[in-house]
Each structure stands twice: as C-alpha cells, then as structure tokens.
Image (cartoon, rainbow, N blue to C red; front, side, top):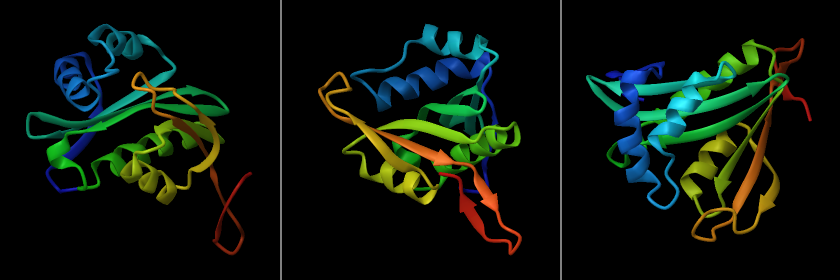
Length: 161
C-alpha cells in the first residue's frame, strides 16, 4: 500500500464516495446507499475505508458474531488495484476481529476472480464450499474460511482447523 493511503473507520460522510465506487465495481449487484447506511448502524459491523488525500480509494467491511466473522465486502478503485490496498484493509479487519476473540473468518468470492482468490490464499483463507449461480449474472461463489493463527512455543504459526 502506498504511503499516502491511510485506513480509517468508515463514517457517514464516506458513504456517497463508497457507493459511487461500489456501483463502478459491481454494476450487476451493487449495494444500495441505504444498505451501507444500515450496515454502519449495526454494532456487530466493522467497516474501513482507504483514503488518499480526500478520495476514498477502497473499502471493506466485516460482520462479527464471535467466535466467527464474515467479510461482507471489499472494493478498491480499479485505478488503484495492485497497490496492496485490499490487503491492508483485510489485514486490519482480521486483526481487529482476532483481537476481539474471533477464531474463524468466512467470505464469499467469485470463482472466476483470480486476483482476489490469490490475495485470500496469501492471507490464509481455504476453500470450504461452492455456491453455484450465486451472483446475479449466474457466476459461482466460493466460500472460504480462515482460522485465527496460533503461535507455537517455537514462534511458528499454525492455524486451527
């Protein structure tokens, strides 16, 4: 992630920019502005934005119901993809969740979204299921799960299964 991008909690004043980005990224099944408002109103949700100057360049959100969490959405401006913004957003959300006691995090990803799948692989997510024709255009979704890392006495990281 470039040095000028900062991560901050999503607030109401970010929502118009987030929604514009959402519609650009997911034209067939974009969340409505009202859905984002409803998400922010829930105490079990954590949403972040990536901001560069005054511009929202990415966002991500999570539903936390300990001991589990579910990544609800991740989006990065197409002109800024490949800069590590999505990874930064996800790492921050995972750290918050795991610090709070979450042991497993789930998410859904389009089966044909190779860049996102590669990122989730690097973050320790594993495929546990598939939902055929899940998306509005008939695309399949993969269900992925990440176990909270466990540190052994030798300092090595293991994952609960």
